[in-house]
Length: 397
Image (cartoon, rainbow, N blue to C red; front, side, top):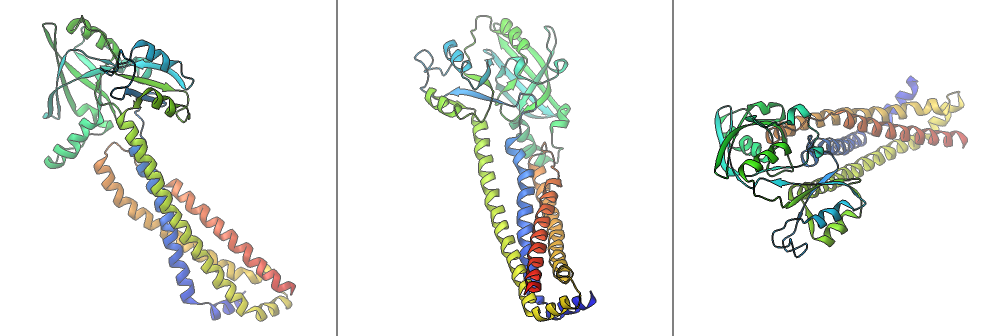
């Protein structure tokens, strides 16, 4: 075995080995970084609201669309709601109920007021929500109302007030920091309620309250009002059903702007990561080709000596072993340093990402590590097979 290593060291090209190592390192780093970045950043654009069922969309009308009865106001009439519910890709449909009275909201965090404005509140049927009943229950006479806030309100605080005043940022686990007061006026009545924030929403642009509270408050502050929904919440049987888009285009309906924007951004992110990973794959393939070429040139240069070694008793697999180990060691070193590089880069961009999106969960590095290990195994296997085949041909000559 020592003789084989002496033969290998004498003729190995350091420059070719370094060239392969650097090319393979760059290619693996690009691939692994692309995979890890995809897993870390995609939840920012595809995170579902934890309080709602997963397969749903919010429908509204484009301006000037719909039936004659509703095209001016953008509201849905019952016939249109029934038509949506009868579609084969729809499981159930619910209507948004908009409070027809005046609502003023004061919101603060740890005693610091960050919002005071006239807003509007809405409700959707409870069956579309996945919130424990004890957290979403409202009974007449309570002065505390459970609410769901748009995440944009908290982002306004996190990226504005908290950033400039060195205040703690608010995430989903710190909702108790939010102080919310709702003052409702209508029908000659006025009453204030304390809002208890139970969740944040990426897709809702209004404050959500329980359906029971909405019914009671409408009876008190707007008893003569009639609910004319301008938006529907639709639970889908299969969000990937190809019939959804043609139906929406035919009827002049559209998904919530935030939801559609997130889908487009997520699609662009997937495309961008695919291009980056593809570049990494190309660089890795070229580096592996350089290694194959270098090793085959070494074998070709020493072909006569290798034949003599086989004639005196060394098997082809034994003769191939130093070349195989060389390839595995170079690939292993490239993978090890690539993983360290990705971990270092990830620590930097995750700090920035968590500053912008405190609620995002820090993903696992395990998928990236497994991907790197699989790439290493594939390359090592190909190296071993090709080198042994080359030695077998020399033996058969």
